[in-house]
Image (cartoon, rainbow, N blue to C red):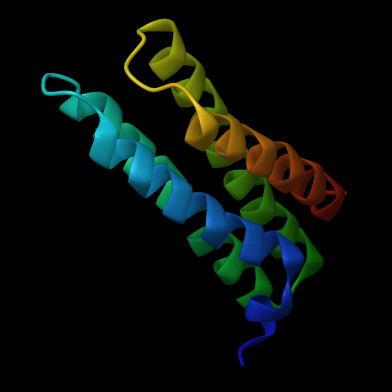
Length: 112
C-alpha cells in the first residue's frame, strides 16, 4: 500500500470520484461540458492528494493539498449548478456534497 492510500482524505476523494462519475452518467444530453468539468475536477482531488504525499517538503505538500482543496470547492459549485439547472438532484448529489464537506475540512487542515 502506498502512503497516500492510508489517508482518510484520499479514501473520501476516491469515493467522491465514484459518486461524481454516477452523476455525470445521469446528466441529460446537452450538458456534456458540465459533466466534463465535474469529471476533471473530481479526478483532480485524489491525484493532487497523492502528489502531495510524494513531495519531500512541507511547502510542496501544502501547495498540492491547496490545489486539491480548490478542485473540491469547484466540484461543490458544479453540483450546485447541476441542482439549479435541475439536471441532477437526489441522493447522489447529497452524498457528493457531504463527502466534499469532509474532504475540504481535511484538506484545509493539511494546508496549514
